[in-house]
Image (cartoon, rainbow, N blue to C red):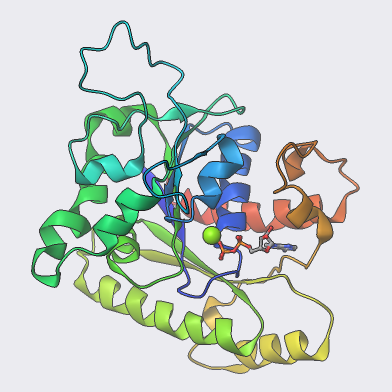
Length: 291
Ligand SMILES: Nc1ncnc2c1ncn2[C@@H]1O[C@H](COP(=O)(O)OP(=O)(O)O)[C@@H](O)[C@H]1O
Ligand SMILES: [Mg+2]
């Protein structure tokens, strides 16, 4: 099974956007069996596919809705009917993916409070309690037999949750806006990638698909920043040949009840759809290159 994650410790650069595009493209266009996983306590990726609810225990956070398979009459009290990816840190009993409006796309949503708790685990325990858990979940035979690829959205941090995803992933992509602060995030992620690559066995490499310029505008700032990355000897081989432009429709599709729900249902003449296809095709061809 392939495991792809967009990572950048800066927020607002398009990690969730790229996760959504990839999950939709892989399932709708390529007809792969996809498991989307939301590893960000902000729950944006989950919200895109499920009606998340306010956590009564901590109102600034979100929890998943009741699972459609949950039947309170049949349960013997050990499941409250909600499942999230954070359950891998507890008892694994809630780790049943939710279906989405796309037939072969399921999602393991986030749970704000539980993910934040895992992110806060003491350093001495972090490897056993956090780092290894997502890998174990993805290696389980249930998951391996049901899905071709997992798309994992990450939080804007280099904390234990993101590190654990980098350890489990087969591929990462680094979305970034072509501005000073987010570009600093690229260097941090490249360093994490190199450390992890060095640690990996040759049989299980971690492939960096590339740096994806996102929300790109034809303004001097963005053009100059991109040119300087493409001129940098150490970086240029990682810069993807395509960008995603700053397009209102990408933001509008994130609104609740947006119609169509996905950019791939827009007419072929739509520029945002054309860009999304180029970027997703480039990434997915690399994910499945050796198959
Ligand atoms: N190419 C784009 N054009 C327009 N809006 C975008 C684009 N990419 C992302 N956005 C919007 O910018 C915001 C931040 O993007 P998001 O994917 O949530 O970033 P991150 O997950 O890295 O924090 C969201 O509201 C999203 O809809
Ligand atoms: Mg996000």
